[in-house]
Image 1 (cartoon, rainbow, N blue to C red):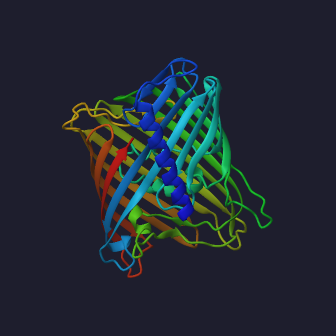
Image 2: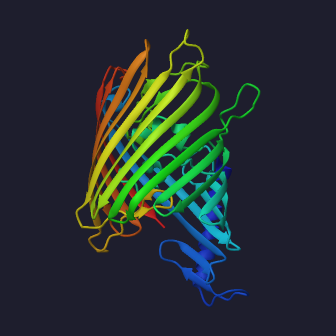
Image 3: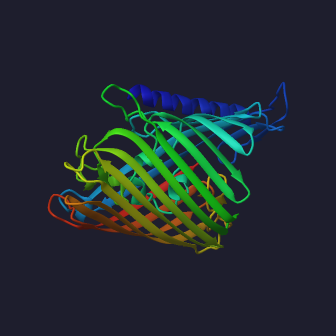
Length: 414
């Protein structure tokens, strides 16, 4: 653990040293002229766009307070922690090769968040090899820096293997043409092994149709499919109900919508649908997920049917529009026009998840979230969310089915 953090801070120091030398004095090169940008991190590129290097990162400091079903004993609890502290490096070499490296500096099991090499020579297609987040869903595709709520919908927890990498490796091809974006990924996660140590693969497919694809002028439709070749699965479904702090606090409650049943399931597939619309400062988005977990033997357990959806509406009081990128099929940052006032955004989200297994369980969780985001400038974002949760057939240790939470975040992006 010490070595991991030492490595991270060493890299930070090296990056700052490079930045200091880059901005001090005259820069000379034996090749093409360089363009150096220091607004929001450090970016160096040759004028012919054949070589580039970019250094950036994010810091997200969170505070959560919660009670009821969010805590083990129903009493008020709180947690302060770094949700993310990342150092991000990316660039291009010889015009057609790209690289990305994201390092976790917060407490985590692995130093490497993402690390991959891309080939850009077959436009409009891009090929990627390494460790990266699977492409599944609009909310998951949007960076954690620019999602509207502090935490993504609990929808992303219903099939975590479909939208989160598991310290494995994979390959992906993606591309954009006209009003369309698509990707196909084959991923070999580190933890999906049989008793002999043989790994199984995950397949992710995503397609987006966006006839309107500009900031403040968005009409977005998407479909996703994911399949996991699991030899054995315990079928567990857990949710934090929109509050990460329940995992950071000993009295936090992260209920099982479906408990573990070791070795009872094997087939696993998920289908997702996306919709988004934006007109000026107004935006609307919604997603639906359906997951089928197949039982090994119907005489022991039945198939588990997992479903969930959310609907979200947001409005920027100061008039700015949410950014949008067709390449990736995702929303992007809000850029405040007034650097003194910043941009102010209000939103509401309704979120529901359900797991059904005939003769065994029929559990659900509903969460309502209201919040405000202040984009103080291009680097600083301050967020506050109030959440109200209600569960059916699942509770904490004292039988609570309802709970409230308040979440705060201070974010700095460079």
